[in-house]
Structure formats: C-alpha cells, structure tokens
Length: 522
Image (cartoon, rainbow, N blue to C red; front, side):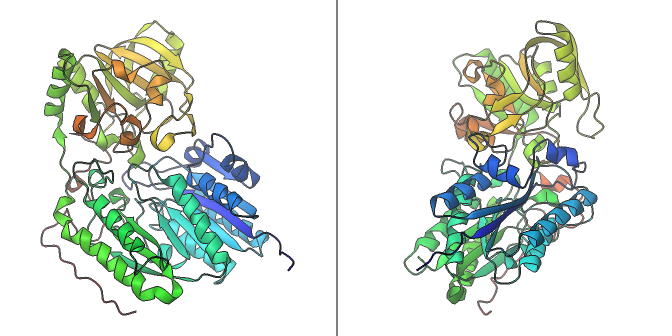
C-alpha cells in the first residue's frame, strides 16, 4: 500500500500570564522574550538551547521520534508574566495566526502552545478567542491539541475547541517538555482517527499561589493531592485506555476574570463520555473536601528579618532561603520592591544574597562606574508603581556581566536566557544582583553567572513565588524556606486586592461558600 504524504501540522502559540493589576504588556515584552515566526520556530524547537518554553521543543521531539510529519509553524509569542496585553498587539497576532492558517490549508492538525491566563486591555479571554478562531478556520474535523500552564483560567471556549486539553502536572513546572511530548502522542492518536469528549468542572475556589505546590515534600499540598488522585483514576483498570488526560488547573487569581476558579478538565475517547464527566467530578470533590487548606499562611517581615539576622550571626545554623512571593516577576510583579532589602539592611543582616532585582538604570550606573567602584545605589529611580518605592545605600560594585546565561536547573534548565547588563553590588552585609530584564529568580545560575556561590551565603532572598524550589532545591529543603509577607502586585493575601470580575462568593475571600457536584447527565 502506498504511503500518503506526511501530516501537515500547524504550530502556533500564545503564552503570557497576565496580572490585571500590573502595567500593560507591549510588543517589547514579547520581542525581549520570544517572538518567533515561521521557520524560526522550528529552528528554535530543535536547537540545543531554545529560547522558547519547553512544550514546543518537546512536541517537536516526540513528533520527530514517532514518524514523518511536516511542521507548518506560524507565530510563537511568549512573554514574562505581565499586565494585560495591548489589544492592538493581540489583534495583530490574531491576524498573523489566521492568515497563516488560511494560507497553510489543507492541514492535518494544529498544535497550540498556550498559557491560559492571558488578558488584553479589551478582552478577558484571549486564549479562548484564539482557540475558537483556530477551530473556525480549520473546521470541525481537523485535530487540535493544546498544552496549557496549570495556572490557566479555563473558559468554555478553551475546553470546547481543542480535541485534547493537556495541562501541566507539576508546580514548580518541571514537566513542561513532557506535556509537549504528551501532546504529540495525542496528535498521533487523533491522526489515526481517535475522537474525543471532555468533562469540565469548575470549583468556587481561587487558590492563593502558595497553596498550589505539587511536590511530595511540600508541607501542605491540597492541590497536589487533586492532581495525584486524577492521575491514579486515569490509570485505574476501569479508565485505562479510555481516559486520555486529566488536567487540574489551579488558575491565576490576579487575572481577575469571570472564568477564575480551580478547574478540572478530563479528555476521554468519544465513546467514554460518562467516564470523562464522572472522573472530573470525582477530582473536583477531592478539592472541595480540602477547601479550607486553600488559604495562604506567610511569615511576617519582622519574623523573617529576625531569622535572617540570627542565621547570619551563627555559622552553625543552617542557611535559609526567603521567598519574596508578593513581588514575583513570574506573577506580574516588577521584581524591584525594596521591603525585604530595606529591612535586612537596616537590621544588619550578614551573608545574604538577594536576587534578582530588575533595575536597568542601576545596572547601567554600575557598569558606568566599573568593577571595584563605590557608588550610591539608587533603586527604582524610574519606577512609579505603588510598591516599587525608592531606596538608596552605599554599594561596592563587585562584579559585572552581560546577563547572557543558559539556565542550569528547574524551569529554566537548558534555556537560553538574556537578562541584559547585570551587576553584583555589596550593600552592607547584602550582595544584591541587579539585572536589566525582568525575570523571576528561579535558577541559581542567575547568581553563579556573576561568580557568586550559593553555598557561601548564610541566607538567600529570591524574587519568586515557587519556581525557585525547582532550581534551589539542591541548597534548600522546604524546611529551610520562608515565604515572606511583604507588599507587592502578586501578594498571596488575596483580600488586599480590589477585585472587579472575580466570581463571588469564592474561597478564600468569602464565608459560607457552597458547591454541589454537577449532574452526570449530558
């Protein structure tokens, strides 16, 4: 029998986590991170150190390994978490995607690399709009597989339009490449004729970010328990081979949308619709049972300062890591609040590394002064954000760099990173790493690129919510990590925000929240 031509699979993506309280994201934010069109997508996906997040390289690798195919890349746009995307920019992206799909027809499949918590200055559901547009263009019979971050705020359009919905399972996100590979497995099954149905349940729970860890060593992991239960159910004898994917999506509170809420999406084969719905309900019931555990518990700045002071003064105490969770660039934070730096400096904390602070003017000033110079370090001279207050102190420039580094561990492992001009500044007992491109401090390479050895520090402050755990776990176990309650654009203390669109009532904002499992009927 003669073989037909290899399947033509369109590849496109839109990946940004949008904080409704942060400044808008512009073209510069995407071009400074990932803006790849046409063949540049394929070249990057097959590169040794891609700039794109690992899902797309994982999809390419698995498709390459499982048979011939013809990639039809269109546009892959990714940016660091930020505020809503400027609507004109997103409209331009939609035009590129639509024209690319139209020109590429006939297609045999589409791979969508999404985040799922996007916003624009005019839309609450750009991810859903993209999914709907793709389905409209390619028609009802062309397979679509989508990968999504587990912080996605899931809309009906995001569920209905892809044939298979694949969410991350780990937080920190250590399985992005694996989920891209899984997407390729599903694509091959769809190309062979498999058809699917999905079960979708949303809970009235908007989990604070610090309650969404999945690692087995986490102190409390109500969210991880939901994911574990879903994977066990998918593997049970009555579901094996029938359930294709179970995704538990914790959501992103700061999106402040009507689609916020912890969600379960189960993809099954078309003939197994009842299993898809029943498993989705079972997983949701596990989350509802543990609803009171979805409340943030942080350490006060005063107590954190006392711990850092004591640790720096006693070399026999184990070193400590302090997470500035409210100023996490991975959640839209600006990466430059000074609350912890100011408190530690004033208290005289010794042997502390702090990173990474996003302050291009200060990095430029350090480079102009040169290594070894003593300068007045003025933080946030160009910032107007309410949380990014100015701070200044005498500092010695101890190292300079260009910020070009390959990630070593965690979510950035193997990824080509460009942080712009960087500097290590000695400020009293603190060594502060300053960069020019806003990125969360999730990889020890961001200290090591300036010659700083984490093992030499008595304490380390990271501007990150949770992904640092996947990079710094070789230095700090969970028993030596303190999540600090300081002000910021992504504080886990959700009652501090003026919500406009969040569905109410929800846990943890309201009392007397009720929920009943939906009917199993279609």
